[in-house]
Image (cartoon, rainbow, N blue to C red; front, side, top):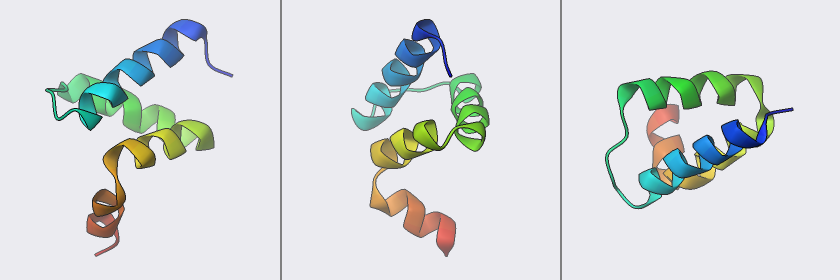
Amino acid sequence: MISTTTRIRIQNILQRIENNQSVTLEERIFLNKLSSISPVISKWVDSSLGPEASTIDND
């Protein structure tokens, strides 16, 4: 289970991704690490990135 602070940080990063705002490499690495551990966070990331991102990864 993730803390409230971590959840808010994740949601803030994902919101910026959805709005095409800048996200640092450190934040992207943070999301990647957490999404590999948590299926819930992985779904959040997939949802924020959209279907194009999963298509690119699978090609």
